[in-house]
Length: 295
Image (cartoon, rainbow, N blue to C red; front, side):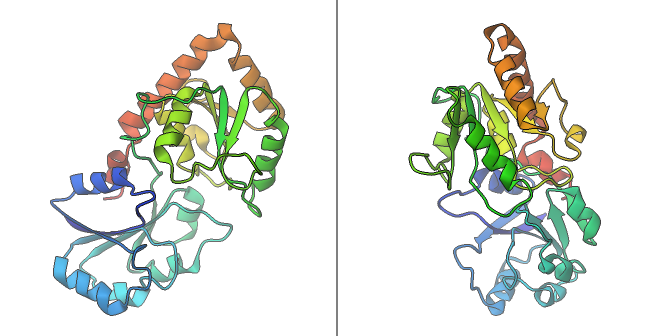
């Protein structure tokens, strides 16, 4: 497979795990970061296709006007995939426009059901960074996420942080939570150290779509942190409650389960669940295994 990768990577978050997995699955691999050249011309796109002669193009385009349906239509013999791990309230119209010429790849099955010629592929993370060995920043219960506004679960996130932020066992990281809160966006090594040193990591995404979670879930699990996951739709299709994650639906339930798990006599249960989750991500939920499902 001669693959050309139009990537979303940049210096802040280079996505080496994804890039290495694509290279591993290709006989020839070439990459181009459209983030560094967002206003590329149509002529430049055709120049890249002509130069590298790919039979497969893997794109990470989330914005209209970068690569159009008309541009893709000129290459009927090339397999085009566009992976969008970003989720908003409405499906961007661009995905419908390119569907006749490109397989749209989504991290939730609701969008797959709505958009023709699309596939489901769950997200992963860079397992060379997110792993159980390495520096630790000691803590008990952590949540790493930004204070978004206007999404389906935005208020629940805010209520959770407000409820727990004065608890001795809780610490939040991210943007929009007020003064004194450390922002770990694009600080992956520090983020991994926080997860490695914590007993419990909370997962709560901003949208509740079937099978959707942000890569936060896989980052914290890959570091060996026990995952307390909001029970998003169809979570049971990929995870076993009580074995590799512990799910919750309400903040009362979340608080009760955290306090139960923090009791010293329950530590073996927490450690076992954290190890099972860590092993699952490293063995089956890595980028190479993910990409095999579509490529």
